[in-house]
Image (cartoon, rainbow, N blue to C red):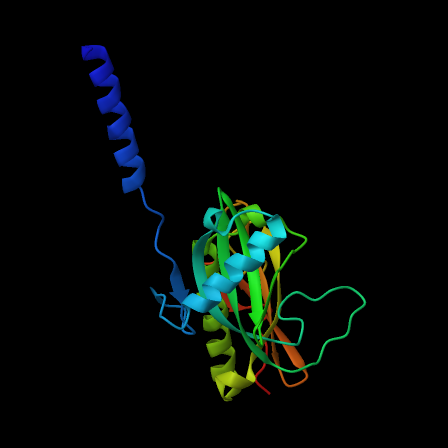
Length: 219
């Protein structure tokens, strides 16, 4: 009897600890890269994204956790997921990027004009995390502000035209300064392509620093 009581108490304790464990609360990544709690108007977006992913994976909505919601100005009608051999309206399209998690895998749902869909990129989504998305948002915003200041234009006229993952052999991120000796070490990061008018500019970032590379003239 004593052994049965001990087993029962252990079962209750385990159940209690499981109930006490909670998912990190979903976050909203603001336009300036700061992080805040989701607002009431963000909740329908999160729920819509969960339903879309549930249908996509054929799983219950309850198996899906929301990591973050981020407002995005998509650079064209593809909403950040252009498909080969398709043409899209070349107009800035307001929308959202919602990161969702199932077990340990993260998925991105893109939204624009009330339509949401799972964005399947060529790169593995297992490397995508909320922290990475926050860091990426902050650095792309920082790059836009820097370029706008250099050109003397309104930041809204500078758009993110694309980005690619990159790896460099040292901390110069592919843009070594004259006379500086860099210790060899592999550095992961991104090359951000910004556009103003008909001209493109590139910025390199390791998600800590971000700078124009190559340097350019404001003329």
